[in-house]
Length: 337
Picture 1 (cartoon, rainbow, N blue to C red):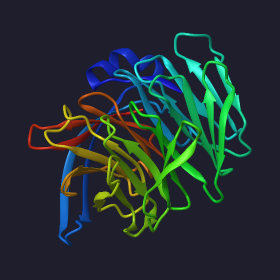
Picture 2: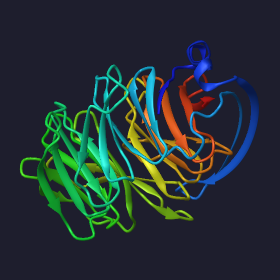
Picture 3: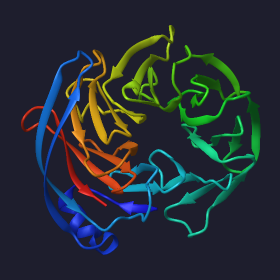
């Protein structure tokens, strides 16, 4: 689903006709959580959140920012957006991938069919000429975007793909899997270039920094077992740099935050425990935790612009979050739709 979004002052005037009647609600929430160092912390938040009629009638599984004021969301789909473009791709349980253009007709511009099972990963090359797709059929396919033809195929036993991410300005593709492995693929021939040390839990998601020097992966888990994000070096050593522990359920998404959004290198994670956390990238310290009460499990996280994040959830659609420095680093929910 294609949705306009922006900070609250613009959402009301641009989006009410699409999202429905505005409902202003004042919410008070108290929650406790255990830090990795064993200290129990309690935060009390009072927040005013603008709530619109839900854009989806069911769970939102993914959200991605197409531009600074437009996002794409999917119920049971995977989505990949072309950077600085009006084009995006969606993958469905019908085993196909569609290419769409915001300024084009309502029908897809291109269709990519070749997987035997549901498509669970999408990654677009930096020059937008190639598309890599991954599936629960243990297969990666590399496509020519212009022709819609499959150029390369690779298959590894038990490699149930969970996510794909193209390394900026490089021919490499990062991939996470249900076999607890993170692989780096070379698109020139679609060969495995590197395998990172196997984790103890299923790897659910991966993200690469804008400079292509680092990547993050995150793990499933329960009761605090697993439930972490891991920072890796993508250059010479390709070693583990840092781990971020503090969630109590599966971590579903992890993103690098722009330097304009934080005063230090930071990452953000979302989890099935209904929390979004901001971490110091270098030390692994949790800087702030936002609890989205009543949202159900959080499924996807995306950087919206220099001050905002988008978060998808099971029960309350899409949440617009804003980084706030008025009283130190904080993350506030400003709208839900």
